[in-house]
Length: 88
Image 1 (cartoon, helix red, strand yellow):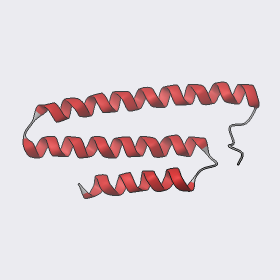
Image 2 (tube, one colour; image 1 turned 30 degrees about the horizontal axis):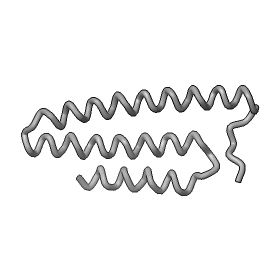
Image 3 (cartoon, one colour; image 1 turned 90 degrees about the vertical axis):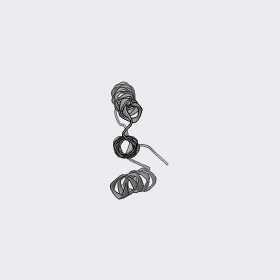
Image 4 (tube, helix red, strand yellow; image 1 turned 180 degrees about the horizontal axis):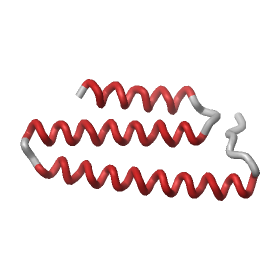
């Protein structure tokens, strides 16, 4: 449980501190999703319930789809603008 909280905080800090690099923002979101998935799976093991493990697999699948869609949008944006830097 402590590991998932540390991973979630690293994801939040990565998202907040790297506001100019969109790839690092996507990686931070993925770290947060995987931390929540780890917490769900650990809770499932402690309660001896298969439903949490099934839910964890769904969360991992959704996180993978989110990464693929986000990177696809980034590639299209790069082809249009020539840069993916966020200007503030």
